[in-house]
Length: 630
Image (cartoon, rainbow, N blue to C red; front, top):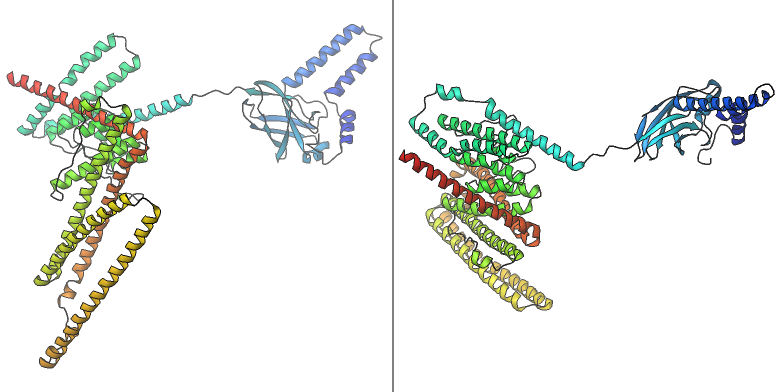
């Protein structure tokens, strides 16, 4: 009672009001008992008691069963409860609506309570005649609900309210159903590109060259095994395979045959590109997203590029890495897809994304490490073919004899060490090629801006400085390695660093002193020549009066070259960042067992894909040999 105080009237007056003035269910019972006692002398007592008690029961059931039934002179006429039922396992909000009697409108401002299933909760006023209540959880079933002032005596009708058991949804099934719908939408997009845009009329109406017809025949010969799939499908249906599996097999067979015809049309028409759908992807990209590895083989035989980009600059390898499809990534790499291509720049990443970047952002860290290694190796190979880098990488191969004696963890560690050696070697050679390129650009700039004699001196000085820096760097690194090997204590290392910094400061000061001394000598000599020869002897202007005629004409060219140089500097910085990220991802495999396992799995998947390509190549060779004999 203390939780819901009455503001307008007191508790005593309330009890008096309820007991004396209101005709509630209890007063109705007293009234019925009074009538029964007055009529005992004239009516049979047992019959009257039974009739009155049965009437009282029927009245009570009527109040519960019919919410519109109202006891005479009740305070509140309850008209509606929304919702009609709530969950039995959670706290729920309900709205109770109704009207106060005209004589008791002042009670609407009091603190009312809602009694639901024996639980008393406060009723908050939303507006006149509308109350909001938060009912607690309750066991499933039908309970009584009414409004009250003290939490016990009702001031409204007693209505039925239901608690229902919630319907349990399986989250795994919901996620699986959503994934199935996503896959179905992708299949619809693929089917639209293959079936809705047929080009048979273009093939028959255009003039086809003999070379294209020959390529189409060769492609048809290579893909003749697809026709045998129908017989395999018919036999599998007789073996009582599941209906869903048979339906998927039939759909896959239809897609394979249509893709074969679609690629044949492209070969005959001589098309090197394909169409996009409304979302900007082509047939190859959708097959990569869906994981159709068989489509990659058909594309590789058709001569179409496997590095064909969609409208956003993504290749099939980018999409496969984005969805973490190891088998699709291995299949694409086995047929020659390039892992070092970059997507179009965006506002979030002006440098674009590699396939390793996309796999890393999606949480496939092992796949990202493997693609990072392939990125560095492919980048170095491209630079070697372009003549920008020299040498060769030391790639490791699996030794089956030595691998048999190693445990699983040792195999993971061995693969990781080999990957890091390859990645570090490739990154070092790439950085060296970048430095060589920068030196060539500086030498060209000197050649175009300086006279011939001074040009030779500056170029020679730059070469000497570069050789000296490399020699000094190697010497310093060797010295540092020896010092780190011998000096293990903190004091010795600290003393060495202090001594080295002091020596560097002394050397820098001495070099500055030497340069200033030579500068003063040169300046004095130039001043003598200027005053004695030019001004006094030849009566001409000195060096300070000389004007370069080419400065104004070359101003625009310098600005343009500066803009181009800034563009190439930005591109080189982005390329160096990609190389650094790739090395870091490969190095991170030492700290994660999961990444080492994923790397090993990806390596085995690539080996399996290469073996499948060899089997397909042998089959094609046999078919060509048989065809040549016919």
